[in-house]
Image (cartoon, rainbow, N blue to C red; front, side):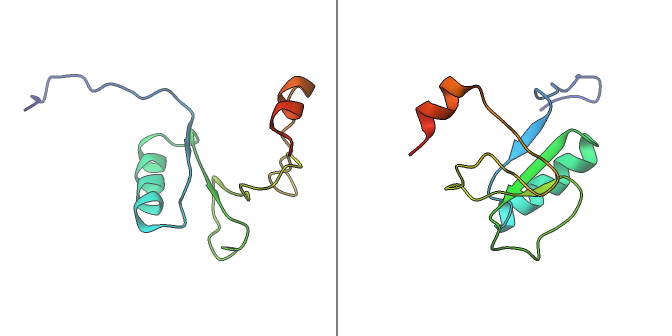
Amino acid sequence: MPSASTPQAVPPLPLLFTGIAGVAGYNALHYFQRRYPGQVIGIRPRRTWQLTGDGIIALDAEDTGWRLSSTIIVSAPSSTASAIAP
């Protein structure tokens, strides 16, 4: 059992949570957002449009266009993009 004086390890930041449409992922996202403000991001399927908020991004796993949302665009080097393109 850790004592009050034992320092706690800080996870590598930023954190990315997948599966936040489920109960466990949703709770974990909010727990870590409170613990590490501005350092935690969660992704959800586009079909769960009701799930919105700070640090929540709509992304379908089969989306190969590298577009995460209307305001955030992520691009990969051409070698990476060609390696994972269908």
